[in-house]
Image 1 (cartoon, rainbow, N blue to C red):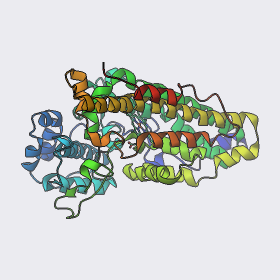
Image 2: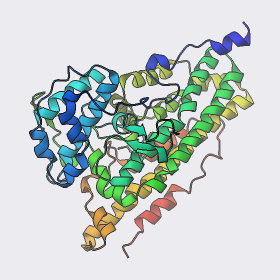
Image 3: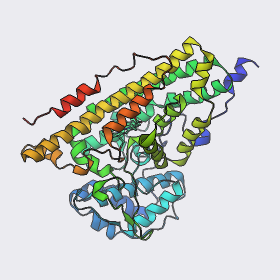
Length: 435
Ligand code: HEM
């Protein structure tokens, strides 16, 4: 069989899993509006931030008509409906902060929200696929996919920092697209025993992981840690493993029993799950269970794609069997790149959560809350000091996941960790004092 034939035949394709060649997991050109019948939703959804700050969102949702979801026909309509209903739900629950939460979501919201969620195969809570993947538009439709030319469709409190948080995450997803396409090449290359093809595809994946890391670092430029910690975070948090909503939430008119769902987290982004499965990186115990559970918060076809990668013949075994120097090097560079990405992410979490949490604790202890920035931090929910919005116990979880990534390396690759050692960062965070 000639190599040309080998190069064009594929055993797995992106299209089958509703993944775009241009945008990857990002929803291409999300709709900006729903049919006019849904104006009551859109009017509230577009003003959630203002309604929260005037403490009137709950009332508006109570007075909203109960609409049927029958007039929502297309996938993109359903995605915009899910995004709109989810920002309303987060605003409704957290409008008064962590102390005055609610036990029940009113049926004007819960019934259509559960309906739309069931049709999409998604949970009835705000997820990464809403706020990041389906929440963007280009200001100039013919312009580039850049921070300057992107806007959110719907927002939550947090102003420019919230915009930055969602859009930078969107850029990480975009940076992953070449890598995502190369995953297909790797799978096909392994299938046809084509070392050259697999090596080249791994090089592309490695570059793509590096671009994802560069995009991730832009979080520092666009997001203010005290706004993220003190204002934004609560609106992303859910009602599972969250002490301020220990009993979960009743969805009125759907079920009398409370339901529990994790909040929005980029742990629900499919790309890292794909890379882990491809590179044979295994996450054990509670961490593995948490990450697996996060797959239930992804669009079903994206979850199926991850599943498909996991049942393909093992790339790691292929690399070991071939014992080819360039191939092994390309594989290990991908693993090291992923360790780098995770280190960079841990640094971000330290700056955006660990350090502000430590400041907030000190503030409460010293009862100092005069300065505006510190005041913002001290309003942050105490229940989330040690936990991520997805509900995980943050640092132990992230470090274990990072270490498990390292374990997949074939020839212990030492150049991967170029970020400052974590212990140093954490020490400086814990030593912070309020001036
Ligand atoms: C200010 C920015 C960010 C913060 C504070 C942050 C925080 C966190 C936290 C606390 C977790 C633990 C899980 C949970 O309970 O939610 C987590 C997990 C995770 N985050 Fe982020 N995150 C940020 C940005 C991002 C971005 C842009 C990505 C890229 C897609 C990302 C990807 C992940 C992944 C994949 C996990 C699962 C753990 C892993 O696979 O390493 N995060 N994040």
